[in-house]
Amino acid sequence: MYVCCCKGVSDKVIRAAVREGAHTVEAVGAACGAGTRCGSCRPEIYDLIHDELAAGRRLPMVEPNAGRPETPAASPAIVSTVMAGFERPPSQRPEAEEGRDAA
Image 1 (cartoon, rainbow, N blue to C red):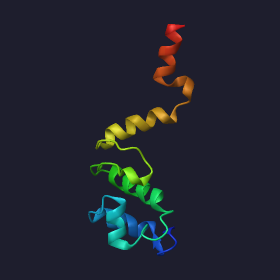
Image 2: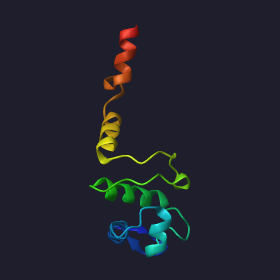
Image 3: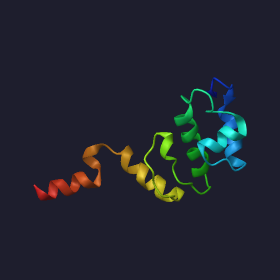
Image 4: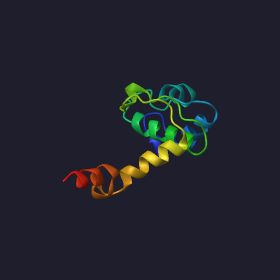
């Protein structure tokens, strides 16, 4: 699938660039040109970087200008634990259970 239509760069090319060491949106752009023209694909590039790195590699610092808040590096185990909380319905999240005890 094409991620960067301006430069004609596919997700496979971006994933290959990440495996070769491009761990930021800017580094991917330098490696293959994706995200260097209009910038509308930068969030998708960011997601591909993190998908690829979460598949068993270390996660880098989040880029502030990639449209995401800055966070420290996290292991894949931490990421999957955090993401599991977002997949549960709000009524089943731990903070909802604490609220029930207080009532």
